[in-house]
Image 1 (cartoon, rainbow, N blue to C red):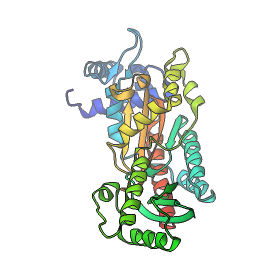
Image 2 (tube, rainbow, N blue to C red):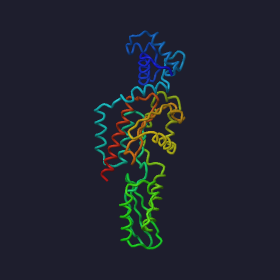
Image 3 (cartoon, rainbow, N blue to C red):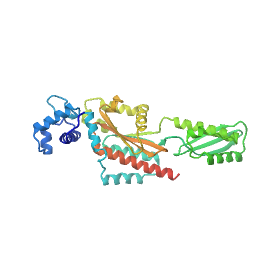
Image 4 (cartoon, helix red, strand yellow):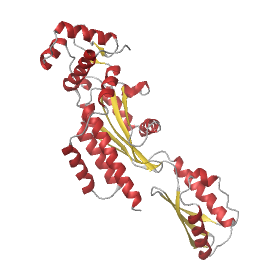
Length: 345
């Protein structure tokens, strides 16, 4: 791709903004008249032809105007990704909705999906926050009957696991409580990897419990994903470019195949940081179902502890200037709520 002149950059941005607004191919005469350009239609037509040759625009039909290509949208997003801001009044409205809700993760997720779908007029997706890496927080050992013991394991981030253990011989509650207390003092905050490498030589019971705790934490780490919340599917079907094609339904089927959607979100989240933003245009060559769509995604949560992913799916023609700051703002809001929730535990 050759470097663009300032005039080509300005015209390209105008073409994309106009196409986002109208969903109609943009002609040179229309561009001059609508934006009162101090250029002739012939000059604009020549520049649009050059932008087409460079791969930023394409011409659906010989007699039609131009529409953006994936490369054009990439340029557009790159120009405004750090400039677009959500109006203060909208920020206040969204914040009020969250802080009026109960301090409940499920309610936050449902509300986030609803807000994203409404503000972007697209399809939203939100995953519940999960531990990035299982970390030990607290264990309780409760004698039930005979050799059976109830182990209650709490991990950082709030995940709780309970299981009945059958020990080699009966153990008094006092000794169980002492063992749990020693573990809570010595291994609190340690990750799964740290626990796996740890050796407790002083007490065989302590070592056995630590082995069972480690196995339980490994199962928690290997768990596929938390709940996925979506909203706004009808928004995508209402877009004019999908009226006579199956592209929207193909994209929505991705949302129905949860394992595929989880895989997509997992691949995206591993390449991003909390608060970071990713824009996938046309599926980025990796997801055929999204070839006519774009996704704006962000991670939220507490780095190194618990994180989730949220975002919006819409046509490539989506209003990035509205969607990008909305996704960024809701992600920051959920990060604050999750942080406060963990601090309050």
